[in-house]
Amino acid sequence: MDLELSDSQARVRDTVRRFAAERLDAAGVETDRTHRFPAEVVRELAELGIMGIFVPEAYGGAGMDHVSYALAIEELSVQCAATGVIVSAHSSLAMWPILGLGTEQQKRRFLPAMAAGNHIGCFALTEPQAGSDAAGQKTRAVRDGDSYVINGTKNFITNGPQASVAVLFAMTDPAASHRGISAFIVDTTTPGWQVVHNEDKMGIHGAHSAQLSFSDMRVPADCLLTEEGQGFKVAMKTLDGGRIGIAAQAVGIGRAALEESLKYATDRRAFGAPIASFQAIQWKLADMAVEVDAARMLTLQAAALKDAGKVHTKESAMAKLFAAETAMKAATEAVQIHGGYGYTKEFKVERFFRDAKITEIYEGTSEIQRLVIAGQVIGER
View (cartoon, rainbow, N blue to C red):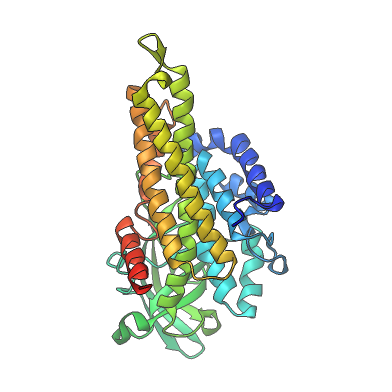
């Protein structure tokens, strides 16, 4: 087994690390404070090829692999987890299903502008009564001639306010339960598309999450993604890859918590010595280092399996589960190491704590990941 990064993968990691250190260190703080979508950062990332990192050059992308993609999301998320998930949702959830499951016409119509960062993408699955129960869709799509007329509501849609393209799920046959869900690629300038409001969230403030509504929104039939009734499969395949992005985001948050804690513990003195010399602090730092590295390895394993075209449902769920819980634990310990200062906005670890929590919730809660993993493990017997 080769655990070394290729030269191209290492270059991607180093390039994004430099960019994040130069552009996102201060911008991450400002984005968190103002809740402003970092549009200028997204434009610069597009110029670097990151907004279309795994999209083939034939469709305007950088033609890199998913390992490179995971490394890029980690590096962005060390400095700004909101920027990390903006890129992740755009890439894994909006571009990949078009790339992996769309027709040649759909790929050529949508991917070049998305890979160039001119069009931001979103993934519209979750509804007020259909979160973990993704099959409980109420949004309805009715065939009318050469179009589908869509009515309904979606909740918590990352990039929703900025999106030009959405991969949207709706019931075409409500009597068929999850087999009645279909997926559509939607141009958000279509009449009937409405951003109802942005959620006021605990963290990742720069990544806007919106409630969307659709009122008699007419979508051309050639924007159906795969076939009628295949939407649930589209969603599950997409989330397998999407969880790699969230795992990478969580690794970045956990690493940031560790790095800030190391810096603080070395500088902060108590009882005549740096607190890094105390065993209680050393054990916290040691556990954080072990778990962040383990989370990264799980994440890169899942990404490598995806690149190899192999089934990675279990591995992606494992990576997402472990990395998310690692991020939350590392951020909690970082606040503890910082003491009272960790509870103030003067230090970054307070932001890491708020940003980490969502990684245990979106794209499948930790509880859902355990169900996925258990189902896969039992099925392997």
